[in-house]
Amino acid sequence: MDPAAPGPLDPSVLTMQHQHRSTPLWDAQVSDAETLGTRHPDSVPWVIDDRIIPYLELTSLYDFHLVAYSRVDCAIITALVERWRQETHTFHLPLGEATITLLDVALLTRLPIEGRAVCTGGRQLSGWHDMVHRILGERPPPEVIKGSGLRCTWLVQTFSHLPGDADEATISRYAKAYFLYLIGAVLFADKTSNQIQLLYLTLLDDPWERIAEYSWGSAALGYLYRRLCGAAHKNVKEIAGPLVILQLITITFNFKSHLVSYILITFAIVSCGRGSIFLSINLTEPLVVVILLLHHNHHQMLHTVRGRILHAGRASTPVAV
Image (cartoon, rainbow, N blue to C red; front, side):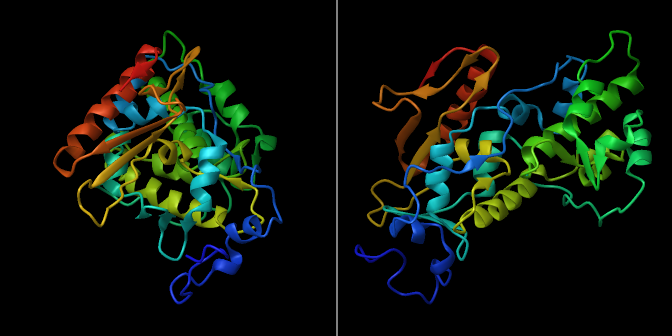
């Protein structure tokens, strides 16, 4: 990198510097205090009945559900996006290049990374009302569906409270409604924060055993890459996608010295219930945890940190690493 100008010394690999958001930032065309807007729900508008949890556990999304509504730090997300290069799908940092891997996603979120590809099988141009009625058991009013988008407020108001006398079929339908919200508003969120794409409902038009076969983790990682690439362009003001993964993720650096193989950076995490929870090791900035790890204990430490994250989400009390 040239210290007097942004971008690479050799543009043969990083060919899109002229479109990258770091260029106007360096040229002072935008303020360095300006952050990206994030499309991410920071609270769960749902009463998660205990009868729904077994379905989340069956599909391996229960652990992700626990951290899905963590408060996202816009400054941290913006700083990472400014260092993301879509030519290489890596963060370019002072210590070298780093990226997010499937192993990172699996260890910190427990999202499955093996199984069926998450594919909607093409765009359905009509019949959305009939599909919602068939799968969820309720027919939405015409005004709550626009194109292929379903208004979130209708979904929440209709399915967020499971009746006490519900039979197993009703519980399954309500579980699919919450599942649709979880993947449509968090895991595969787009910039229309008041709508959920009904394309994802086509994935739920199967028995639960079939739904549990999907590789949600690999799909989420691919979608996050796509959103990072889009947000890395100059003049882009917002970013969507599974931003909680970006904030919780492990970023691995490989030092040329090989004395230290990994640095785990975990950002401000869980906002659960009435209190905000964060990891802290008595740093001056409690929102960031930096742990130096040796190569041989990297995976063990990841399991430990992940366990404490989930414990913090359940306990609603601060946790120190």
